[in-house]
Length: 212
Ligand SMILES: C[S@@+](CC[C@H](N)C(=O)[O-])C[C@H]1O[C@@H](n2cnc3c(N)ncnc32)[C@H](O)[C@@H]1O
Image: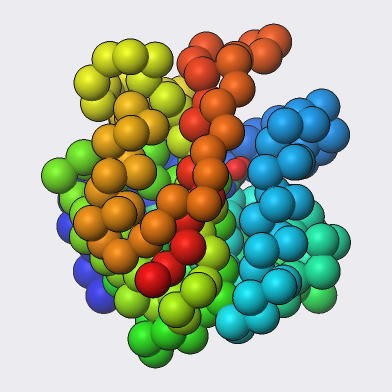
């Protein structure tokens, strides 16, 4: 990777430092989240049906979700900024592919992917940069490719920064994020909001989009 801008270096350092603890925390947490598994299953079915290419989990952290996607029958691989996260993912899932990279500048040809999952990974992007992230997602997706965004929802408020445990993150109004994705070349397929469960602070937002 070329030299990172300061906010991405800060995110990398923060996730490198916490990676082992984070991996332990999240390894099995989907087991207790039926609605999250449901939207992931819907994503997988759409991506399998469109059959437009491999699926990238962008901001994959320790890789458990990439492995989950593989279990749903997808040709999935992971990309993350944090080399320590990628090292943990490779160690935990040696049969899967994990690359170090930034999701706003992917080393991939146009239209290469059939699907993208960004699961709580655009949350750290400064809001003014979100359009360029979505443009990059659209660039690497084939027409009819599927995008799933998971994020913290702002519950009626505007885009809001908050003190995420690792580094500053942002809560988004689901309509704003859907609007930006529309401007980047996506059509909404559906959305799922769920209220915070035990140990969670904020409403969770999930947007399923199709590349047009
Ligand atoms: C909250 S964690 C989510 C990890 C995983 N998707 C999960 O659900 O557990 C955010 C992850 O996104 C990664 N990340 C943040 N900005 C990124 C970027 N620009 N490109 C690639 N990865 C990024 C971080 O390194 C971190 O591993």
